[in-house]
Image (cartoon, rainbow, N blue to C red; front, side):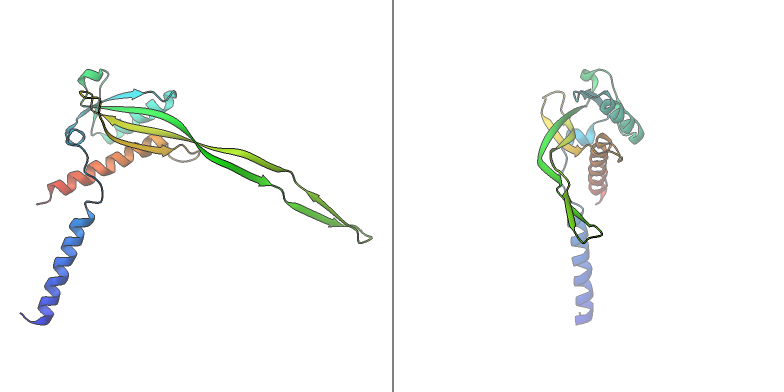
Length: 171
């Protein structure tokens, strides 16, 4: 084989191996998650809107049938919410000044405010209803003027399921 052909073959093999490696960037999901077709939504967040958003996101996805009886479900989607302390944020404390007609400088300082920085998270835990074991968990910060944290957590699960399913279909 000529050196140029050998180099070409080597580059093709390297590209193929890197493509296969990059497709497995996540820890594989449990077989129960991949095989599931029904889910029960258990909203323990204290916020009815989180359960509503979960229901809408799952209906829109179309992969799972949402059931009303935990005993009929292949998976339980447990939604909780928690607060995490981000420390303190200090604002203000700026100094400004003016000069009058006689050249006198007068300065003023705005007050300094220190407030606690607390983040609220929506947490999705995928539970095996037979054993109670957690199979996968994702938490997303609740933010104003963005897509809901609940929908983003479900979208993350959707992405992982679809990538794993696509990878497992490859020969």
